[in-house]
Length: 457
Image 1 (cartoon, rainbow, N blue to C red):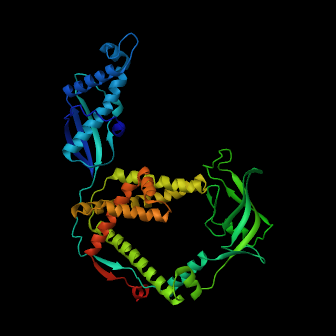
Image 2 (cartoon, helix red, strand yellow):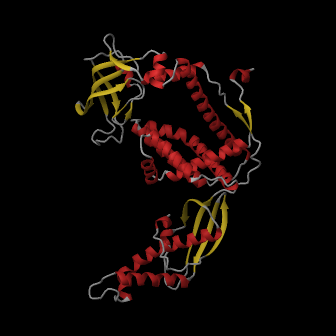
Image 3 (spheres, rainbow, N blue to C red):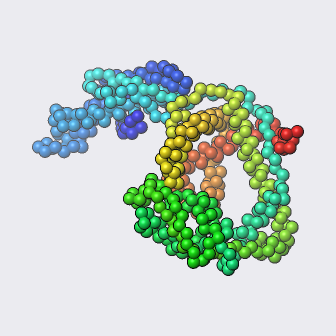
């Protein structure tokens, strides 16, 4: 509705003091009948014409001296139409404050296009809003929750050590045989559409795995087409360009990615020994490195386990505490999620027919997931207010600094980025919800989760 877009009223303007009647018309859904008295409407009209007279310049009249009838003839319709939205916005804000309403989503004004502001008459309208659900939680202390297994297995340690070796590996030319999975390939790539070379990239390097993308397409199977190829060989890979391809002339068309292999390199891993531990990690022995890795994994598993337990506790609270939900908010969130899914599929070159099949299949599941997510959010927010759980600014700064280090930026740069993209408030909300989950864990009865073999017994 246009309320949110209406201009703010001037500070010097007096309150409208609207009368209102509120009727509950559904779960979390209220209808408001609002009326602004005729004298208040007249006051605002006079104020608008006074402002207009002082600012507008008309031929034949000094600034501020244009007659009222001239102003009404030239600007009356536009002035009253603008005033309509100002009255809607200002009166609704006053009612929200007076009645302590907490709308979610956009208010819906009935027949807004038919509403008109007239001197000497009251201004009345009806608006339907959805509000936050009323939540009364049953006991949230002493809930039982299972802790996921946290044992550090040898395979966990070996996987981390292998990642260390991969990071320090040397790429050496492959002299015998063709390209294998995870080799690095240097090649020239040409995009061919309708027999014409559309784009070309020379001496591009990539690792042969299922995480390769070209021209806005995610090509999970491309690497299989070049396995076994050697320097000097070529291969054509058929694909379909996405509907939003940069060049509209080729969008949605069948295409070929022509690959001319120039070199193939393979990782040569260093030996995993005491020298490796000393050189790269300042450890006295390989055993010391292994023990350090074990401690790291243990800390990470503890962090993940607490996150899983926190989610399980929230899920249990959702199960134990049913409450009416604002349907419009669920619908809007579901639609947004489906639009994101649509965009994601389109950028991968999935045909429209297949996209609609996928979205039709996901619609019900997306709505269910959105409802669960919103219920969790409302419960966590309710608990945060009830238990007076807040995020201090020092903690926010520390978290911003952590994110900045992950992206190789200065903390002030990351903070500016988060603020510009409206993400800082979301970060605070996420941190607050994490604190609530930790509070729930502190009050929970933690049990060890049964292993798979124990469950089957």
